[in-house]
Image 1 (tube, one colour):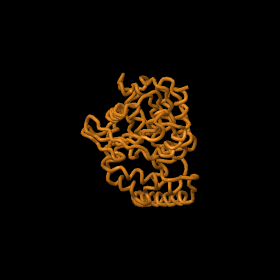
Image 2 (cartoon, helix red, strand yellow):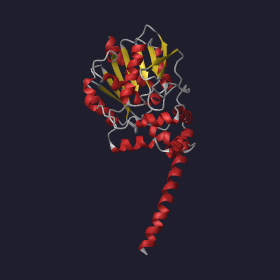
Image 3 (cartoon, helix red, strand yellow):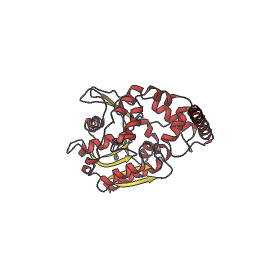
Image 4 (cartoon, helix red, strand yellow):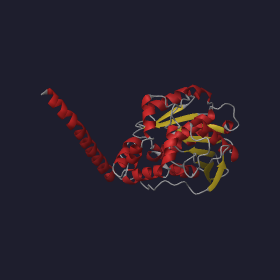
Length: 322
């Protein structure tokens, strides 16, 4: 009798779990469809500027776009995994309105940039960023990195007394990571190499529901979700996978005290991908770093709260320039 009961449970439990997931997804999509988009929301696009291609020492071609006042403070923005420089569109425009020169760097394999022979990895991404600053002869740079872009920025600034690192006079880190050494982090990065996971992301029902919970702190509008999914789909799947796997076993925590630029770490309180506690630890390890928490915001708080991000960047600019 007990065996029959146990067998029934083993059969019914997965069915009930799947049914629960389906109901949850449908309710989530209903909330998304009923949520108003932010006032004046448009699909993020980088303000039109001058597009340049920078060649790296391993043969990669990095696409860079520079916009705004050439005489203003230079702010270099570096995007995260599966994104491109267009994700910073609202923030870049707000900075241009403050007479800044904004530079959008597309990391290798993203935004039309090629990969090169060295492949992916935090150290390589830091070297890429340094080569961009050197090739464009950018001085007194205010460096901003979101997620994997923050990893590239920290990698550059912990490489020692390099000429490229010396070009940076302030650092703003947005929802990033200093290590991927935990088992949970290793597991989720490894998922990128699973075909079923890529199909899940691209599925018309599962994809939007997954994006709501992993990317946003509060329920986004349907257009914002669609914009986020389209942003990720612009990055070729093999590059998304290889860039994710390139982050495995990354740990730069011991080098963070080497960063001597004025630094602000900003993170959404509800960020599930790069958690608030992980970003707080980064702020604790960088000398004189300031931590800013954004309430009710998730990993894509660059869209949810662009005004606060812009304010944090400009605060660093004003701190350095007086």
